Image 1 (cartoon, rainbow, N blue to C red):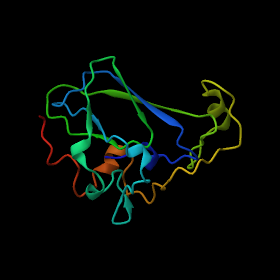
Image 2 (cartoon, rainbow, N blue to C red):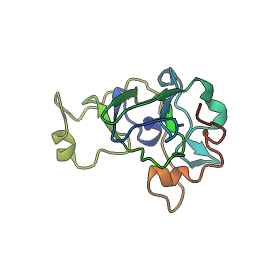
Image 3 (cartoon, rainbow, N blue to C red):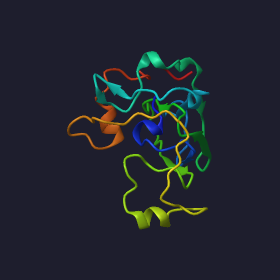
Image 4 (cartoon, one colour):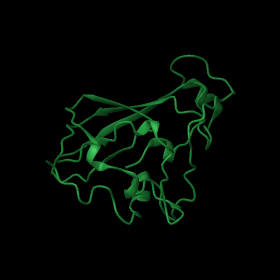
Length: 171
């Protein structure tokens, strides 16, 4: 389980995650699971032995309360950027593609940098971006240091000693 701010810290948490199911998301193919109310909790630590691993520690999460987000193709899911979420391994022969997009307030700046300023401004869907970030006191942790020779989120999570889903079976 992880939350987006664990990977991409921002100046505030006025960010909505939108998932569009390309394929059906079922228990068998490892549907998205979200821990209710976790967006109001602390900035969970996504490190293990001092290295960023892209998931929170097992003892920090009650997987028994995680809600399963079952979707048909074309359905959408919505969750707060700080909501703990994750997917079990796909145990079926079916694909589980999900397009995830984050929509942030214009004054929510990535702490790690926004890249090209003109592109950042051109990507504003509504409102006017500026150069003054708003800090709302949302708890943040920086996703460093990262493991050597790992690039994607999925490669980083491969270094976990134990996942949240090793003991969970579809019901």
